[in-house]
Image (cartoon, rainbow, N blue to C red; front, top):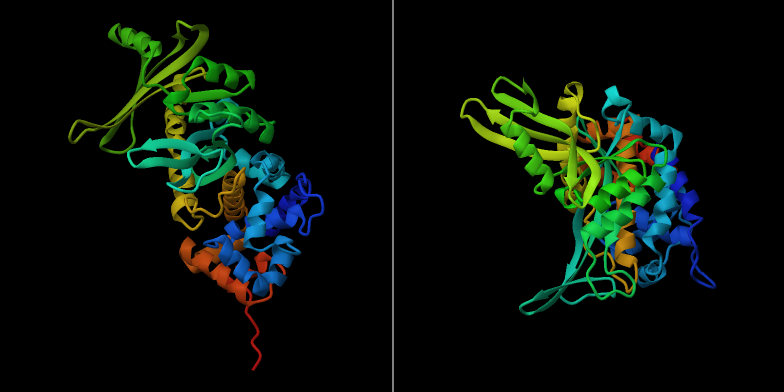
Length: 424
């Protein structure tokens, strides 16, 4: 499956616009070199470049790289490439027939026809007191200025599945010609149309933080025929809900997760968002879990939604709403702490390099997640390696040491379905 997905990526990389007059290296080769660096979990661009001579044959066979530039050339070539140039690649991967079946299995709310739940959140991926570019966000410090980059990411999640599938990411960076810092709120407004572009035929259900429980964001979501569930922390909705609760007019359902964990959800539909957006009506849900042994609340949450809340879906609604945290736990945490090194500075540049490399890393993570889900040889190899960390180390060692016609061959060797013949 990995090799199948690489062909899709390489085909789309061939379509990325060329900004050079007489290129020595094709744009596809340079982009694929960046992707391969993150796919193989190399710790730096220098490491990838230093290993290139011994890997050359395998990089050509597996990643379709015919030639790769040196370290500085790599950064210089990719710096002017806008991350939006990779939108078509994400779309091609996620719309592939084999991949679409997996996405459908991640749908939620089957009783309502099925929604693809997409969690959205922001994270940082670069910070420095010295290195900067025109797109850097700037924070005033006592001893000077701090320069940093962030992104708003979107990921397909399901409360009952550990696997997540990145959709795309929008850089939170100073926009061209602006002296003001960008913010997560504006980045998400740019991201929503791109989600619709990458996944045009899905029933989108966006899972949002309370920052986005506003009229402009909700109107944008509804304009693209999407649904949403958003945390609600303050505002007129809570005033209305409090009054209904006092009059015992909220509908209620209680159930137990286990012998001691008591769950209670209360809800209503048709509340006014606020005075400035009186025409926007939302559903409201409040939820808490109580440990009956101590009578202490172990979790509480409140959400607004464009969905019509009914008793038949309330348990699933709560589970899906809480799965927004998967973009933090199963996505950003993995990218930062499990081999991808999101917070490491692979290259900053003067234009788009830092954001482009973060997007390539997200693409590599997407391919890893799809391969882990779809590829039986990958699954057998992972089982044989016992841990994901050891599995990735074995992949890199074999890739560096033996001739490979495909990544599938490496998986079979790790799974011991294929034995190496050693010459005497």
